[in-house]
Image (cartoon, rainbow, N blue to C red):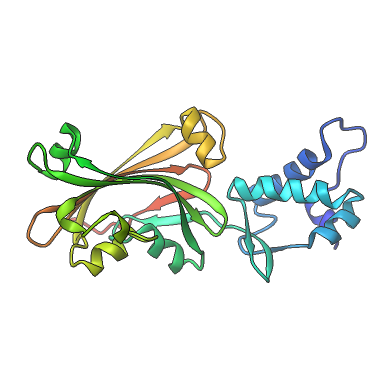
Length: 246
């Protein structure tokens, strides 16, 4: 069976742009699990020949699906169906650790890195006195080349030597400075993405999102982290293992 027979063919007479028609076919096949996670996608040249379209059309279709987090491009290997990421709430781990454990390549695009005084909200969350120094990190988190989340993290200045200590993994920097959280309180709620959040995540305004608030603590009880992470709702699942309370 050819790839087009498996996924479906373009509809003659459909006036929608060809790249959008191809995107729709692939998107529906992914959601229906006709194309399971880690299934390789044929090369652009082969797809262009099979669907009788230009390679530019194919490239534009695939790029859009990559931005939606549905496809993952692996350098030197090819393009694959990207599975939804599951976050286990019973384990205290960083975004980078979560992605690496699933065979995905984590990276960040920095929006801002700032040093300043704690705000009233941050002081309440971190148990800090007014005027205490903090570092603020705002970035887009990627898995391979797919935009997954926006992260807003506030760290007490006593946990890091300076802003430059954080390269890609915040938890790695905290661990190097002996201030990695050993426990955390997390809160999850459903949100609609704002226009700015949607733009940064390659989504549409009011698309479903997941907001995860985390407050991390050191062994001595001091706070080490107050973070808000906004995840695309179409790429992220939260799971928790439950036991009998009796």
